[in-house]
Image (cartoon, rainbow, N blue to C red):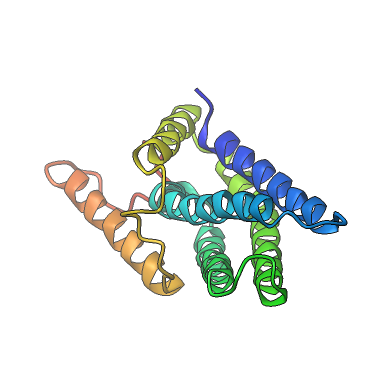
Length: 195
């Protein structure tokens, strides 16, 4: 079973390929709007699902086991997810392949490219030090997320306030630590723990 880092990278590669396909379709002498719409609809949905899966599965664990930069990286990532979602939402406001639609898709692409580069350089790189068992377990959960949610129906794809998101995850981690500590002599946060 691939670990979560590998699965996130696979999505990143696929995102880049899909945007490149849109470039190719746009460059053709005769634009096939149905083909453009087909590529975009699956890409837009996967972008939203990917962000939701990362927010549910990856970023809470990065905050748990990451280094001192994990909080800053998570705040930045949630902001990036919002920018990507906003681009997807903006594109939905216009007919496919119109000038305003292409502009919204371009904004989505820029936000996504910046997010992927930062995530690959920071959060994913930092998470390589997490135990292999944890990465594989999270990879299983990440893959299952897309089986359970083959579409965005029923998935919260709304923008999130980055600071509220981090604060709520950290409160959950503190509650878990308090629960784990009750009845034992261990005291403290789960930050840096690997189990």
